[in-house]
Amino acid sequence: MGQFCFLTAGESHGKGLVAIIEGMVAGLPISEDYIARDLKRRQAGYGRSTRMKIEQDKAEIISGVRHGLSIGSPISLLIWNKVWEEWREIMNVIPASKKVEAITTPRPGHADLAGITKYAVDDIRLILERASARETAARVAVGAVARRFLDEFGISINSHTVSIGKHRVKRIESIDWKRVETSPLRCADTSAEKLMMAAIDEAKARGDTLGGIFEVVASGVPVGLGSHVQYDRRLDGQIAQTLMSIPAVKGVEMGLGFGIADVNGSEAQDVILAASRGTQLPWRRATNNAGGVEGGMSNGEPIIARAAVKPIATLGKPLSSIDLSTGEKAVAHYERSDICVVPAAGIIGEAMLAIVLTNAILEKFGGDNLKETMANYKNYINSAYSHNRNAASKRK
Ligand SMILES: Cc1cc2nc3c(=O)[nH]c(=O)nc-3n(C[C@H](O)[C@H](O)[C@H](O)COP(=O)(O)O)c2cc1C
Image (tube, rainbow, N blue to C red; front, top):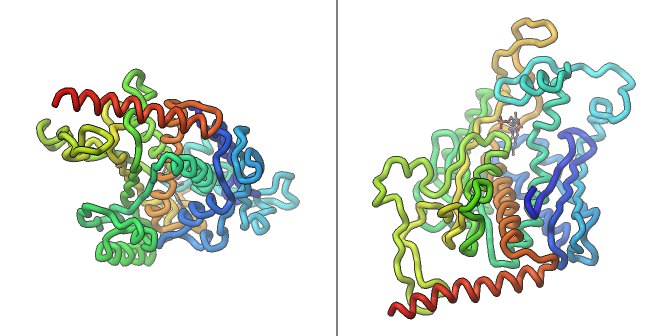
C-alpha cells in the first residue's frame, strides 16, 4: 500500500458502492458536488447501456471531511445503486424467500469461468456482480478526491478517445479539451467521431461490441515523482499497473509506446535543448516520446499514456459456451450491457492516473496538512529547480 491508498466494496446490483481512502492530508477543500462532476463524466458516452440513465451517480461523503475540508482521517464515500429495489430479491443480504435462478453459462472473455471455478460457487452471478465495471464508479469518486488534491499543485488530467474499432483520430498537435468534454465519444476529431458513432450503431445492430484506445494526459507534473532506485517505485510501472487494472484494458503504452520499437535510437530520445531565458527550468525537450517519464521519474513533460480497451464480452448475439449445470453446449449469458466503453474507460484512466500522482506527490513531499505538503513542494521547486538554473547560468 502506498502513502495514499483506497479500497472499494460493493456489487453491481447490490445496495451500493463504498470507497475508503487512506492518507489524504488535512486541509483539502472537497465537496460532494466536485466528486459528482467526474461521476457524471464516467456515465456519459455513446454506446453505454440504459443503466447509465437510471443511475445518475452521486457519492455521499460519510467521513473524513468537516465543514468542507478534509481532516486527515479516512475519507469514506458511499454511492447508492438506484437499481437495488428491483434487484433486492436476487441480491438480498438475507436468504431469498423464493428460488433465484442461477446463471450457469459463462461468457467467453468475462470473469465468469475462472471466477466460478476459483471460488467454488455454482451461480455466475456471485462472480459477475463484482467483476462488473460498476465498481469503477467508486474508483472515479476516489480519483476525484485525488484530482482535487492535484488541482492545488496546478496538475490537470484529461483523457480523449484515440480510436474505436478501426476508426482512429487524425494526429492532433494540440487537443481542444473543451471540444472533448462536449463530444459524445470524448473525441477531438469531428470526422473520426462520426465514423465511430456509425460503427457503434452497426455493432449494436449485429449484436456485437467494439473496443478502442483512450489516451490520458497529465500536465503540470513536477520533475522527480517516482524513482529509479527500486522496481516498484518507478512511476511508469505504477501508471501501467493501475491503467491495466481497469476492466477490459488489455494494453498500456506511454509516449511513443510500442512505436518506439520501430525507430532508431537517435530518433527515439527526446533531445535536450536550452530553454529561453526566464523559464523555471534551464532546459526544454524537443519531443515527448518518453511520455513524461524517464528512469521511472517524471521529467517535467506532460505524462501521456494510452490504453487499449477490448470489445466487451457480453454480446447481444452471445457466443458459444457450455451450461456448467449440464455440461451441454449452450449460448453465453446475456444481460443489459454496454456496446462500447472506451470514453468511460478514459475517465476511469484519469482517476487511476490522479491516484498514482497523488500518491507520488505525498511520498515525495510528505506532510499531514496541505499547507505542510505545499511548503515542502515549494521548497523543492525553489531549491532543486534553482540549483539547475544556477548551474546553467554559471556555464554561460
Ligand atoms: C466503463 C466500463 C463498462 C463496462 N461495461 C461492461 C458491460 O456492460 N458488459 C460487459 O460484459 N463488460 C463490461 N465491461 C468490461 C468488463 O468489466 C470486463 O471485461 C470483465 O470484468 C473481465 O475483465 P477483463 O476484460 O479485464 O479480463 C466494462 C468495462 C468498463 C471499463
